[in-house]
Image (cartoon, rainbow, N blue to C red):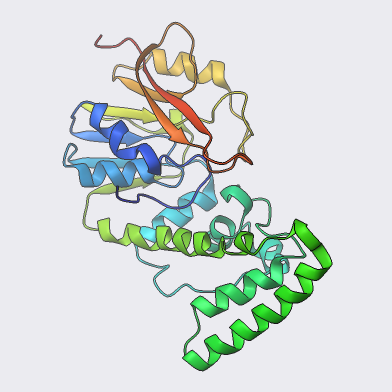
Length: 276
């Protein structure tokens, strides 16, 4: 399985290829709630669509996607402290996406007691010379001994290794530059403001109802009415939808942010009744 898009809460990276496989071909793929861009990225590489329209209402996420397409994260390797995070999270996509808990753009990823261990690990991976890497390893081991004594059984070294996941998320920002030759048009608008061309597949990964809220509130009733009035088929990812929409597929997906390991959830694809 390939990796698609940027690190972002609710990313469809795990099931992007499966979703694209059940959607019809068209000239345009319109990703109205683009988020981290996993679906736009996958659609652009699928060969099913000549053009991709990516839209994201949150300015910071939109900015990050456009920067990623331009390859502007290629040299990125900064360590972001708690202080840096709260100073920069509202303006710097790298800071907000790669150093927030669950990629929620709001909460710093690490506890105060673990932060310096994460910093050592980060700097080990990005060390410019073996000598510097060795110094960071020594610092990590010294601090780990202190913290493991202070925290007793509450602290596990494996927890600190999620710095590896942070590096994978940074790669997520970098990999999008590989599709800069594909015709992708980007908008920073509310979904109903995007002009949708004829012969489009419209995909909507809306904020899931009755789950943790995203940065913006969402008017579900307004969206349902809008979707049902569209001439194009509108495909919606959700757990459930009003009976006026038709379920066409469901997928099993592993939940990354549960305290319980290997918990799986069922995501569904619904469509407005146009064309059915």
